[in-house]
Image (tube, rainbow, N blue to C red; front, side, top):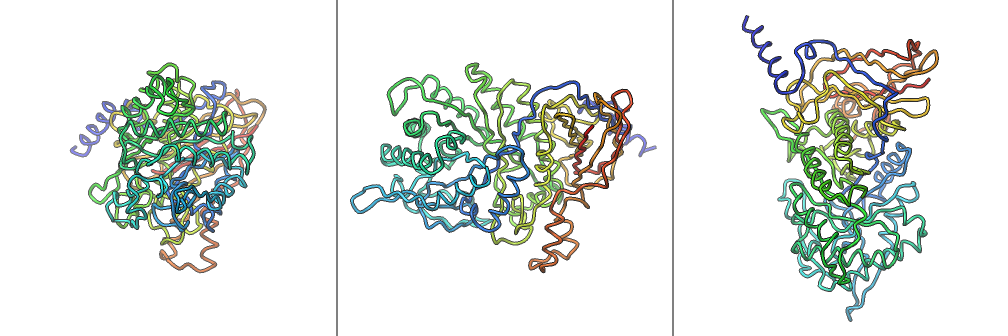
Amino acid sequence: MFAKNLKLILLTGLVACFGFTQAQVTAPVTIQVDLRKPIGPMKPIWAWFGYDEPNYTYMKDGKKLLTEIAQLSPVPVYVRAHSLLVTGDGKAALKWGSTNVYTEDANGKPVYQWNIIDSIIDTYVKRGMKPLAQIGFMPEALSTHPEPYRHHWKPGDPYTDIITGWAYPPKDYDKWAELVYQWVKHSVARYGEKEVLSWYWEVWNEPNSPYWKGTKEEFFKLYDYTVMAVKKSLPGARIGGADVTGNGTKWLNDFINHCLTGTNYATGKTGTPLNLILFHAKGSPKLVNGIVRMDVRAQLRNINDNFKMIASHPELKNTPIVIGESDPEGCAACGMATDPQNAYRNGTMYSSYTAAAFARKYELADQYGLNLIGAVTWAFEFEDQPWFYGFRDLATNGIDKPVLNVFRMFGQMKGNRVAATSNRMYALNNILDSSIRKAADVGVLAAKGSREAAVMLWSYHDDDQFAAPENVQVTVNGLTGQAATVTRFKIDQEHSNAYTVWKNMGSPQKPTAAQISQLQKAGQLQQIGQPQRINIKNNTITIPSALARQDVELLKITW
C-alpha cells in the first residue's frame, strides 16, 4: 500500500509540475511528426564551434578534428578562438594561446608578424570553414598593464590566475585601430575580398567579466575604434559584440544602446555599426550525493533573458544573433579530476543534453521572432593530454567522443523544421521554471528536405543515472508514394561511443595501435541494422523504437 501511495504521489507531482497527465506518464511514449506543417527553416545554428587555445588549430589532433567537423556539415562551419592577437611564441598551453602579431621596435614603431595567425586561418579556409574572428586580446606592447603577461594556469588553480596583461585596455587607441586595420587588410590580400566578406568579426570576449580590466565606457571606446578600423579596411565586413557572459543582460543592453544612439568615441558621430549581436549562455552542473546533476534551465534562462531584451529593440529584429558560447557550464579546461561535476563530458549525457538544449534554442528564437544564426559549442580538443580526462572537448587524443556524433546527426537535418510533438516532451516554460528533474524529457526535433526527412529523438534527464529503455512509437505523417526507407543512427552505451569501449579496455592511458584503431571506429556515428522499407498507408508510417535515459537516435527517412 505504501509503495502504491508513493507512486501516486510521484505521478501527481509530475502532473502538477510538468504538465504531463497521469496517463502520459504511464503510457508508452508516442511521438507525432507532420511533414506537411513547416514551422521554420532548419538553420544550421549548431555549425559553430570555439575554443580558448588557438595554437591547437594547426597541431596534429586539431587539424584532424577540424577536418571531421567540416565534413559533418553540409554548410560552412564557423570557428571562434580566443587570443588571436596575444603576444608570445605560439606554443599552446591550457587556456593560453599567442600569435605574436604585434610587437614594437626600440623606437615604439609597430612590427607586424602574420605567420602564426595565417597558419590558424589557413587551416580553417582550406577546409571550407569560416572564422568568427575574435579581435583580441591586447598585445603586450599595447597593454596599459603589461606585466605579468604570460600565465601558467593548470586545472585546480584559481580561474582568475589567467587574467594578466592581455586583459587590459590599449595605451594608445590609434595604434590599436591601426593593428586591426592592418589585420583586415592583410586578410583581404591573402584570402580575397569575397572570402573575407563571408566571415564575421567580433570585438573581445566577456567584457563584463575579468576578461576586460577596463571600464564599460572604455570597452565602448575600444569597440568604436575597432569597428572604424575594420570598416576602413573592408566597408562590407560584418562585425559585432559584445559576447557578455552570464547575467550580463543589462550590460549588453547598455552596449546596444551605445551602438544605436550613443556618441561614437572614434568618429564623434551618433551610433556605431552593429552587424552581429553576441552573448554567452551556460548551464551549472553540480555534484549531488555523488551524482552529476545538470541544469539546462540555467543555460536556457540566459538565452531567454537576452532574447527578451534584444526583442525590446524593434530596430534589431533582423540583426543576426550568435550565442558566442553555449554550453552546459563554463570552463572547458577544467577536467573531472579537479571538478567532479564535469564527469558528464565523456559519455552520452553530454550528447542528450546537447540534443535537448538545441531544440529549445530553436524554440526560443521562434518565440521572440529573432534571427538566431549560430550557437557556438565551446569545445574542441586538448593536444597531448590524458585520455578521457573529462575536459569539455569533442575528441580526446584524436578519438571522437559521443557528443560529436550529435553534430553528425544535425548535419543530416535539412530543409524546414516541421511540427513534431511527444507526449513526454517538457514544455519550454516548464524547463525555464524547474529544469528537467522528474520524468525524462523524451523529445523530438524533425526536419523535411526534398523527399527526405530526419527525426531526432532523445531521452534526457538532468541526473546522470541510468534508466531502462522505454518503448517509443513514432508516427510520421505527410509522406507520399508506396513505401519509405528508414535508416537509424544511435548514440547510446553500445553505439557511437568510444568512451564505453575505452573503459572496457581497462581505461588504458597508452593504448596499442590496435586499440586506437578500435576506438577510432567506435567514435564514429553508427548505423543500427540495415535500412528498413516500410509501407506507406494513408500518407503515414509508424516506426517503433526504444530509448534508455541519455540516448539519442536519428531516423533518416527517404521516399
